[in-house]
Image 1 (tube, rainbow, N blue to C red):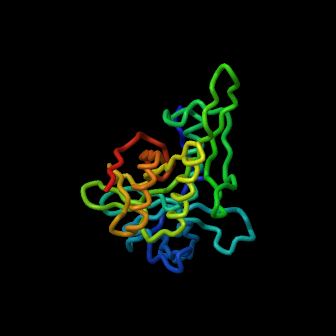
Image 2: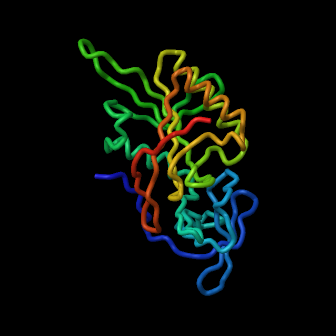
Image 3: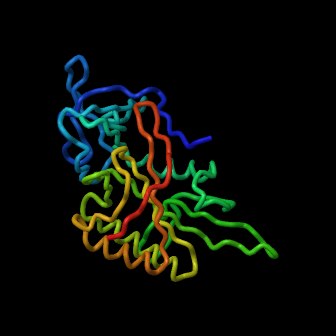
Length: 246
């Protein structure tokens, strides 16, 4: 069984007019009506917010929401699908681990989310722990930081981050500290753009992030990259893709 994040109820189609103020977007419905929806993405969304892209949005029944509709996924003129809602990434990776689809992260007994840790007031996305006792050696705790990747360059090359990320830099430092303390640390890039075939740090966007990541890998932080299959009905985790340092 594969990890499948299904959209239920079904998403509704529209066309993108503009994304603005980071968390808002105006879209045009099939009947030419214009509405404002929530954009759950703090990044630059480079290449993922082109005017007239096909937008697919969900609708909440929460009456207290000012903007009940949420931008979930899009499809561009090249036919590529990409996930706008970055909050989906943690859920997808967590479910994939539970279904034993990520072989590199198998064999742990417990998994917790948003656990406080580190020296810089951080929360780890996923903390995997073992409960084995002697004579079976216990695995070290595994700290997993999940990042959603949607920045597409040339020839299927994907990058992270899509903007200078002091928060991302902090997370790398925290992961290095966990390795130094004897734990396992993993930076998990979930590629949520169907045009991406390989993954690299975006040195041209955030050179400090790229340098920190190179240092982290040298010190033992692991990097995993998995792509997804995306459409208007669901997001399905697919397979590992190459990570290319720079």
